[in-house]
Image (cartoon, rainbow, N blue to C red; front, side, top):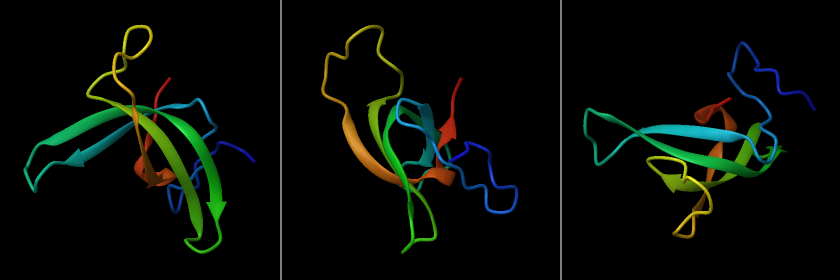
Length: 85
């Protein structure tokens, strides 16, 4: 599997360990709020027709060293996550 982005759909495989950012609007507001996490699992979903990922999120920043709180794991389509260097 390659990590190339499909130019039409924006879909891509994100390898476990990839740092990601999720930008979303909170409570219908006008301000994008980023959350930062690490991909735990990503695979192609035949049912959805796209890559489906689970990511462990740390909140508004990556921790410096071991996290003080347990990250929360959420499921998102790979195309909704931005891979970070």
